[in-house]
Length: 408
Image (cartoon, rainbow, N blue to C red; front, side, top):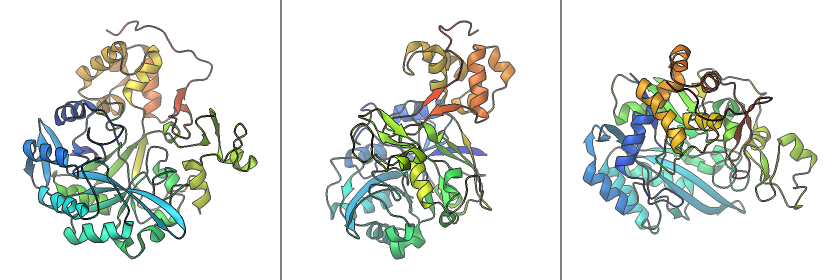
């Protein structure tokens, strides 16, 4: 049974998130997307945790609400000094039960507050986090989040480390998986031999419930039974781990180097020629993910380690429709086309991965069908994102078609 899991999301209690995130909206749009298991996000927040306990029905460490399965998850930010530098590392925690999640939160309360943000900030180190969470339950899973982003990650150019062992020290043995983040894909991570022993996972880090955010990255497992142990075992061992669904890394907000305020971006090669200085404001550029991978890589592009899990890059369906029509993803025109496809094929992943070209052409404009097929083949071209700016789709020598045209 192929299941799609997105285990890193947020609730309405996290900063910069939609205030309309509820279990109802998550369940509704998770099913529309094609997700089988969602992370709850933010289980350390008292109001969200209370809501989860009141509404979720438990079965072997997996919880259910309105036909959507949930796994208890949270993210936290650790900000501290080590080796003369400020460090800002985000980690995702998976917990097997409400009881264990509550014990983790009670320990965190001895270190600071958990009620002001669904993704709380603490001043202790990553080894201390791992030591204490593992002492509460060996069944918990700790995953360094979006490991390449510049500001808050394991390998971040502005606040991270060059080696996993430097960050987690003697507790590295408890780390089994790394979240690659939106601006990198497994192929980029395969260039570092030091990462070969880790599972590379992909989750959305969604701050809203909309299908162009929820499940934009996720993991596909082939499981006979869906429970906490089968999912976490697949993450740790790579057994029954089929593939990850990825953003095109160029679409991520930190793929290239650049300055958002200066409207300037550059490839690693261009940045080197500029000595890392923005030509507009003369300040240091924000070094992106591709540059950081190049800095730490000990292999050439294209290398694939033995036992590596496959991946597929996909742009969300709403964004493809938006590009063809010329309207924003949240507009009625885009939704009308999206809903036609969902009604016919069941969910978004079925459209993007499995729907036949012939059937698609019966429903929507040829231009959109061509984009869906190029998307499936990984052949889309994008202008890379940088310094907090998403990348965007480009098609050379072609113009976007205007209007809805024939959709029936």
